[in-house]
Image (cartoon, rainbow, N blue to C red; front, side):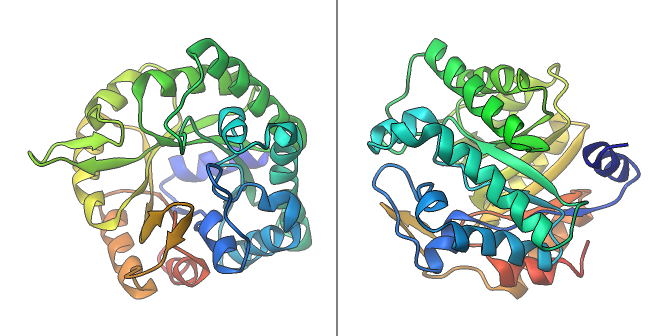
Length: 295
């Protein structure tokens, strides 16, 4: 039984799994500069030792899945930042640095997930056919580098999500889906690009998705998101929320939730049956350290 199937067996047996916290904002906190229109995916090449150390720190505090620093290394994002020539190397090294951290920590049971998104910081998107081809290439690079699974992150548009899901699956790796949400003035839970969360879930009900997460969503909105998720989805669920604010090109840590308050919120989510818990932007090593005692 390989590592991924062993972890899935644990989840189906009712165990809880801790994933890492944010990588992008954590390396920003440690001095890696942000890049206009491309977050700080370039840090994989300019500051590999910092990226590797962040992965190691999360493994040290109990994370059983670490996500590569590849949120902003989709081809269309790198084009917007003038970094397209580094597409293959950024995606390959993003996975390899997480694998190196796993080896350094002698933690071979830890899984490495390749993070992929359709998000664009400029809100300019490639044609659907090109998005599919780009994602197939990106996921194939990650699989070849040794990733154990693919995490689709910040899914905010249903049509683009379905393109990414089909494309990423061609890598042969399992694919988990992460929705990012907000609550509108009428109290409806919506994806960031405005479809409802219920519509997003409905679109993948018959796609054999192993797990859906609510991720990169405000902590205070998670309960409402879980209400919708659990009313429309009977499969495995995860949460990795964010705290703070993006003011291009940086993440601003003002009023970031304390590790203690995040752990308290996570305990409530787990009481609702959420089995995979971690953190997104603004949620760092101190937060994940406290979560280790809850899973």
